[in-house]
Amino acid sequence: MNTNNKSDSIGNDLNCKKIESIYKKIEDLGGLDNTIKEVKSILGFKKIIAFSGGGQGIKVNFDDKEIAEKIEEYSTLAKKKIVSDIVSRLRDYDIAILTGGTKWDIPKIATEIARGNNIPTIGVYPRRGEKNSVGKDLLNIEVVVDPIYGESHFGDESHLFAKLADGMFVLGGGAGTLIEFAHVMKINEALKKYNGNIKKIVPISGIPGVSDAVHYIPGNDDIKRLTFPDFIINSGKEAFDWMRKELDLDDIMKEYRYIF
Image 1: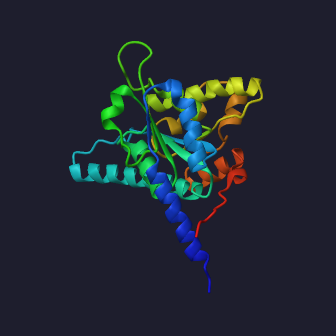
Image 2 (image 1 turned 90 degrees about the vertical axis):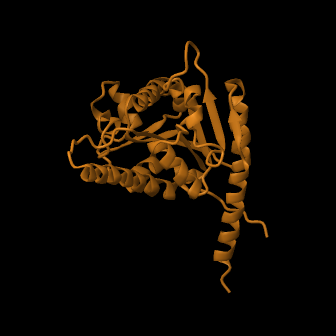
Image 3 (image 1 turned 30 degrees about the vertical axis):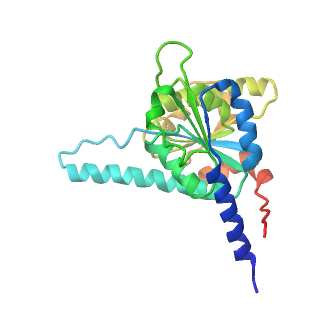
């Protein structure tokens, strides 16, 4: 009698229940390091992979509302397909998924698909975005970032998002994604200088926005070569394969331990 499927099912059920039972909301960033370490030890993830982007859509004007809606629907389906192709492969590794934590576009899509694949989730957003969070039903760690100065605005959280991520997939994106991309590039300058682990970015072409423009953004050419591929990637599988190699993900492949 083959029991492999049974043990896989039991293991996945236990893992799913553990993930669903862990939730931390952090509003005092002074305790963030300890909380991340605590949740890492409980859920066993070793790297954090971020998804950034969305918000641009396909900029075509149509008088026919039905055609316009179909174009928007196609854009959403394309994003879901790409994210799903990446996340379904990431589920075999000890990682957590980081997003902007809000109920829009790529953050929502990536968080939902990650949870559907039993992958721990982290959401980081500014105080202004708190009311639009996807919430504790989908997030294991929810980080609310207060402004250092003045009122809360989107972008207040970008420095933390960039520092938490070991790797980042970019699909489309506007100003917020551009900030995160640039911040990772700047961090990598210091990481290279002091022999740190370079953060990796995979821009996925075909979704209008930052991901189609990163190859043309001014910056240190050495850091560009270290940070993202020098060729166009336009599928989830290609994006995953590059990230897997560059972050040595095979070193953190899951070792399932089941309790009977």
